[in-house]
Image: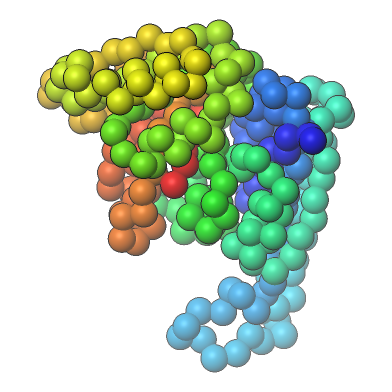
Length: 268
């Protein structure tokens, strides 16, 4: 059965990075990329303070959606032309980002989505939230500006909890094919923090290097990004912490996503 990477193209600005990272993920496991763009239903854009959607407003939204769809498709066509048509297919969907992603995630092993711009409230943020918390699938969060690179070296941000173990389990197809795996524990340099990781990777039959990092004055997120070094991916667990903005813009995850220049593989 073909492994499908669902690349969610929420806007034109993050589309190229998302597609190129998704293709690298697919190539590593002999899979394909399904590129999903959602034309949002104008009715779903009505704010709670609004009572009706006027004809003029509906027409304006439809024009904006059509323009964005053309721009995203242009990016898609450019990536396919540059990297080759094999392994790509395009999906048009309507409705809301959440409903469309949930519907198409059922056939995907991994979802790729560009990290939203800081404090940006729009389709990119909704897409990432839906992918991570509503689908039950792991998500490859791709920095804007990231380019295609083979997945050969994988770093794992280790923390002894269910989310981290889930992330390792979900990333196993890529871990098994990696040339190098580095397990990082950001817990004051205490090597005992890696005991669970050593047992898990031994049980999985995976060879890895283990490093306990003392972040010093740095935040855990900054220390993790720095310790990942030349890795092609960073794998870690994710949690829902109150509102989505609290998770995305006020935690270790926020620091990692803000500072990382490589895709971050998250499992919830």
